[in-house]
Amino acid sequence: MSMRTILISKSDLERLKSLLASARKFLRNCGPEHLTALEEELQQAEVTKEEKIPANVITINRRAVVLDLDAGKKLEYVLVFPRDADVAKGRISVLAPIGAAMLGGRVGEIIQGRVPDGIRRFKIEEVQRRAETQGAVA
View 1: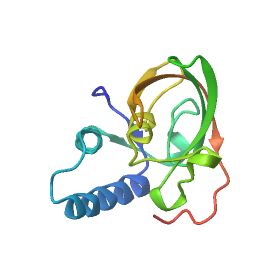
View 2: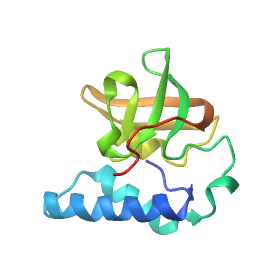
View 3: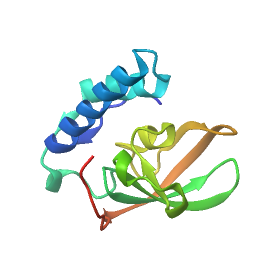
View 4: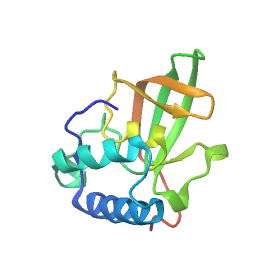
C-alpha cells in the first residue's frame, strides 16, 4: 500500500482506529504489515463529512468495480467492516490486505494487496454510491 492521503468520515475513522487497536491487542503488536500501513494512512487521513467525499473515492460500504490486472477480469467488491465481510458475496473487510488497500482509492488508481496465492494488482474502474448493508456496526 503506498502512502497517500485518504479521505474518511469521522465516524469511519473512529471505528477503524478502535478495530485496529483491538487487532493489535489480539496480535500482540506482531500484526501484518498491511495493518501498520493502514494505521499510518489513518494518521495522515483528511477527515471530512461523508457527503463531501467525492463519488470516485472508495469508502466503507461503497461498491467498487476493479480490474484484476493479473487475472484480466473485472470484479465487484463492497468495502465493509469485518463483521459484515463475506468474500463469497464480494464483501471485503477493510482489515483484509485488499480491503486496506482499497480504502481511499480513487477511480483510475492501481492498488495492490496480498491474497492467499500472492500479491494481486487491481485497477479501480468504478466506485458506486454507498451500498445497502445490514448490520453496519463493527
